Structures are given as C-alpha cells and as structure tokens.
Length: 196
Image (cartoon, rainbow, N blue to C red; front, side, top):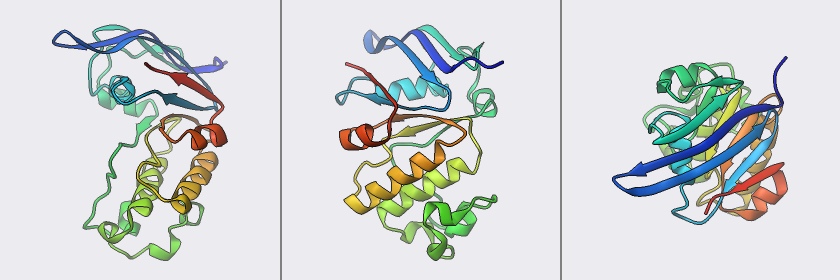
C-alpha cells in the first residue's frame, strides 16, 4: 500500500561556493494534490526543482519519492520513476508542428490545441506555447508533475486556460508547482509551502 506522501524532502540544502541557495527545506507533497512552492524571487524555488530532478546534487538532505530515497539517483533514473518537469521558459521544438510536438496519444481537445495541430510550434502565441509544453509533459504520463511558473508572462485568458489544464491534469497524479500568481495558487492548489 502506498503512503499518502508521494514526495518528501528532509533538510534539503544546496550551497554554491559558500552561497546557500536552498537551506534546510522540509517538504511533503501528498499523493493526488496540487502543491504550490511559493516565495520571493531568489528564495530557491527553481533550485529545489533542480534538486528534485537531479540537475543539481544536494549539499545535504534527502529526497524521498514514493517511499524510496532517490537522493543519489541520476536524472534519467528519477524521470523513469515518473517525475517529469516543465521549465520556466517555454521549451518546445519551434521548427516542429504542434502535432509533432505531441506525438503520443494525448487528447489535444483537453488542452485546447486541436485547432493548431499543423501550426509550427514556434508560431504559437506565448500562452499557447506554455500550454503545449504542459501537454508534452503530460504525454509522458508522469505520476508527479513539476511545473515551474506555468502562468508566467500570460494574459488572463491564457492563465485561465492553464489553470483549467492543471486542474484537469491533477486527476490521477500529483503536481508540485512554483507559481508567483497568488490567485492561481488560491484557485487550484490544495497546499502551499513558502520558501524565504
């Protein structure tokens, strides 16, 4: 039987040549929850994501995923476990069409991109590129989806679309997201952790 906690950090710390970017972070993400990681710029939110996905190695602390200590794992091992991440900047293949970006069988109606199937991804407006990026991460069928500022730089209409998409995506998976838009956090998140 699975624990109620899918992801936990204990004393997670990252130092860069004497600069402490993340200090003693204790985080518990419940299975099936949308959990926001919030705080001011420079608080270490993106660094926490880099630690969770093994882009950085912690100076100290533990990362436990689904009851297993994954602190020493490599990025590919962590991804195979079902932890998938989107980035702060739109990360799509601009020369490919939307259809090509989302090759796997993902219901494009759910993400509102059906009408743009054959448009080059690089030609999409910014908000739609972010939607496409989330769609491509969902196509990997993650158990834990890490979203780094999914509504950054978007207008109201796109923010609402992405909020709806995240809420839909949370069915059957856990989501940990960094978000500065407190209305988004209040509207869709079950729990928040504040970094300072």
